[in-house]
Length: 520
Ligand code: F6P
Image (cartoon, rainbow, N blue to C red; front, side, top):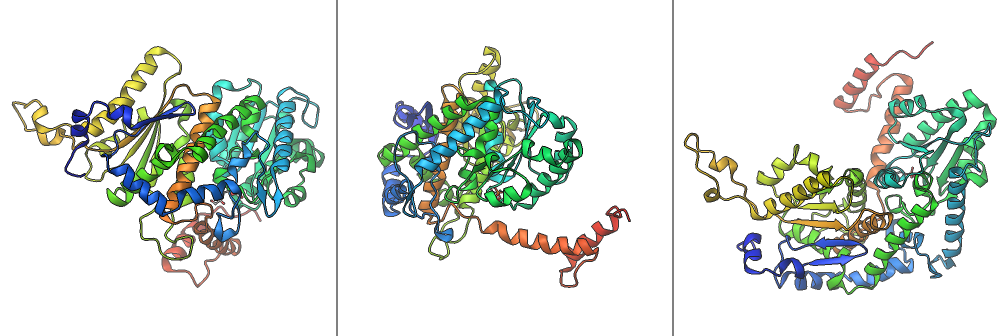
């Protein structure tokens, strides 16, 4: 394979694009610029068979405890299934409670949007502040941004995730207490960053409206209702999550409440419909025509055979600019692991380092490296073919396709005009033969957005299956949290514990020396 360039493959086969592109749920996925010959996919499909991808897929949809270490199912597909299909968890058909919860959440969103649900003083809400982090922030934030064309104008929807105070202060500075609705988005309702921000927001609201205002201005999306009630949120303002939905897979649950508020319940339901269309494709299509499966197999092909270590996700559409951050958590928190489901060490390098950004802007930042570095980075271009202003769209689309072509073709020395002066040829040459995938959205609609989200959820699950991982736990984040608690205890007493290494102690002391003295 390494001796046959992609360029020559295209020169020898004019049907390559037609043979290696697939259209599903409003997306066209072009895999023809990946290192594929007639043998590659059949061999990779053998790997899928050997790793029982079909069996694992069936288990996912059947509500099996695919999240082995936490003994949980991962039923994000149930969140968006409009049919009467049963989804059984621990012997109970949860599809009824799911639909009830979805209905409650959408009704609430509708009442806020149409002014039936108002604040403590009877005024309509004009601002929603979503307080959450990780999967309780990235997915909804990305969705609200991507579908801003569908926003209902009265509500400004903002997101606060980080805990340095500035993000929340900025959001509160622009907010009117009487007209602000807070969503505390937290599956555990214990995440330190989220609860710190939520407590600060509550104090801000109580200062303006008194304790009685909390119940009218706070709602919770959580798997822990009792903790939310303790916080001061009433039962009717709590929208449930379940432990069989992973945080980074939860956009189609009430975690997406901010989207339903920003764009209205109907748009939210259209996102569900798009995601469900991709779910149906993933569940039913033969593996050889199954786009999530093919994209996952190419991840293994690139990571473990072509020895790449990263993956760039480049949306060429301002509306999709937050997609890389969401996919980064989805893929790296799911499969950035070194131990197999059975506890043994993995024999692969597992998830790529996923990064990205707005494609047009990336061309003026890191694309230099992707074209000429010895390190090859596969790219996934995401291009919406609709959009504002013909001129702008032509520039965007032409650049996206040109980047993909340049990576594939390269620029050889004999294609570079010889200058009379310095020999710049070696500096201008581009090695090429660099693989990429291009995903075309015929139009960025709620449906195609939902399908795109589901596509990446399923390719992530299949990659984890192929690497033998559990894609639904995240034990690696616990250790840092525990150490942070220990350091917070030191900061509470104003002294670094003697047990720290000299770096941690030195850093703590540097901070303590600068920390504003708390008022006596
Ligand atoms: O990063 C760890 C994590 O648990 C993520 O998986 C999750 O999306 C995020 O923190 C927030 O968790 P919660 O929704 O429980 O606040």
